[in-house]
Length: 389
Image (tube, rainbow, N blue to C red; front, side, top):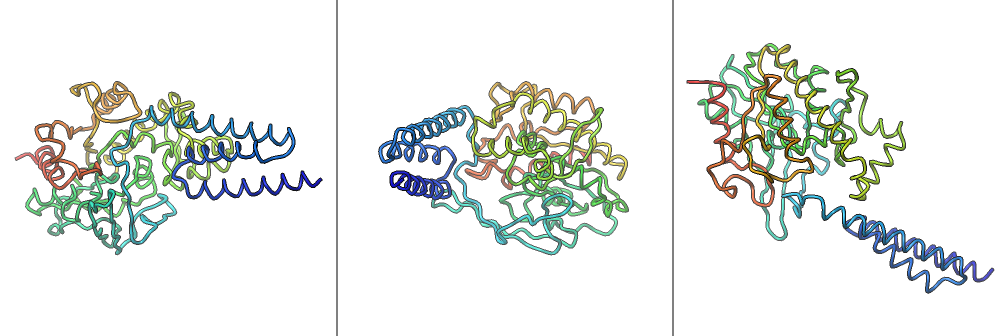
């Protein structure tokens, strides 16, 4: 009995060390490596063959998980913003929202500081008006209105208020138009569809809206199925008989479907788990994405009598092999654009507009978001497209 008591105390100590390590260590892979070391320690320290064998099994399983995760990580593309540290004041920003999961509050501001190692890349204060839209230059009363909706590329992450795409578009038009910036970092087409469905954009129906403008990137494909730690409270959609149906939030779905919830949580921890069923998940994401873009096009026509215009940072038929970084094969991405063209959605290629410039002139260093030079020349192209002289 004394040996059993000693083993139990030792097992509790090792479990406590593992719990502390899981909190302190930077990834699940490192936690698994620690578990393997602690398991080997148990082989030496425990008394009795059963205890030692159990510790050896734990060590083997933990080591296997660490190796599998490391291998899967090598196969995954490294994000361009890897190593960045982002801080916002208030800390939980954008704040929670009962309809979209998160969005800026009206008449508020947020301070965003981003560092890369010892270097501060930027410190920006984002300001929001009475409608929760990011502040842009005021147009004259009754001016033609353009709605800019989307994620951080539309929002202008890392840029001052007056250098976002919407602000640059207003400037390019001599401040004679009203450009409304409704972008929110981390958004996906499902957020935009839900905003239309629930009437959040109805406040602009009485205004002369001439176009709804969005900006797509390949990373948005994974977001339509909630593949992102910040997306749990976001609206979830499924396709039924080719039609989109809102089912609640991703968190609600995962609570009601424990197997799917466990698969998601394990996939967040381990890359090799996330890779299981990747082909089927990507097929689902593509179909949802295209359906959502078609729905946004229809909403734009029905509510405003205006086109949906899509700016894309995305490989197309003219791109060289190996364009950009994405978990989606390039032919799949090219095929999505072809389907959007067949829907009659006007498309504007960022690469075509910015291709003559070196990439170092176009992006915020280490961050990957467009800088003010990029938004200025893209705004000029958008003006040529929407307001021909």
